[in-house]
Length: 260
Image (cartoon, rainbow, N blue to C red; front, side, top):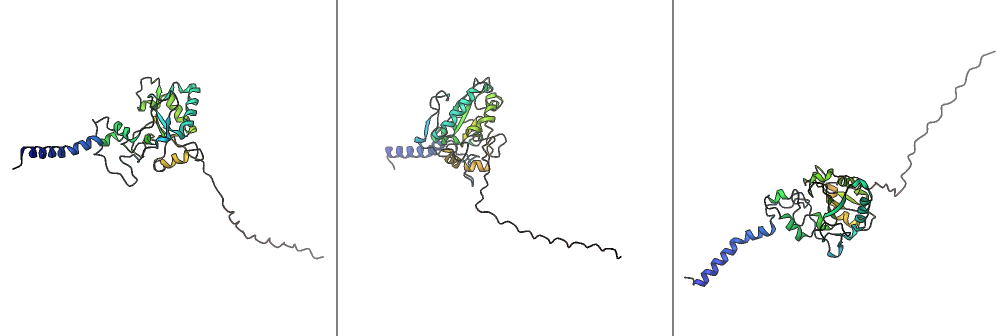
C-alpha cells in the first residue's frame, strides 16, 4: 500500500498530465486549424518566418500610431517617398499613418489569440496565424487614416476614404501592392489597409529579396492593385530569314502583225 506522500505525488502527476493538453492549446490557441496544404498554406495564409533583427529599423518619425512601428530597411526610402507625396497632395484629405508594421511571430500569436469568441479557422479569415503573417517579414504595413471620420481602423469603410483612394491610385509608384484585394481566391478578408512592399522594379535595391519572399503568393494570388513589370523581349540570336521562291515572270506575248 503506497504511503501518503507517494499517493499525493502520484495524484499531482495525474493532475498535471490531465491539464497538459489544455495548457498547450491555450498557449498556441490554433489547435483547430487545418494542417498545411500542398503549397504550405494554413487557412489561406502562406508561411513567413521572422525577419532578421538587423534588417528591421524604425519607421519614419511620426508615421506609426504606436512608438514601436518598425519596417524592413529596404522599404524605408520608398515608404518615405510615399508619405511625402501623400502630404503634398490635397486630394488625400488627411494623413496616412502606420496602424501595424513589423510583427514578429511571438507578437502575431498574441494578435491571433486575442479574440477567443471565434474558432481559429474563423479568425484566420482576417488574422493570420503565428508564422503565417506577412507582417513578420517587415515588408507589410497596415495603413490608417487620420482623422478617421467615423471609420474604425482595419475596416472596409476605409476604402471609401480619399486617402485610401489615393493609395489605390498611387501606391504602385512607390513599390507597394495590396496583398488581399476584394474577392481574392486566397479566401482572405478584403484588406484595403494592408499593403506589402516589393519594390518598383526587380532592379531596385532589396526588391529581389522581397519578391522572393512573396513569390508564391504573387504567382498564385496576384495583388490588385499590383505591380506588373513590363515584358522584356531578349533576342539571343537572329532567327533565319525564310526564303520564299520567286516565280519567274511570264513570257511576253508577241502580237501578230498583219500580212501585207
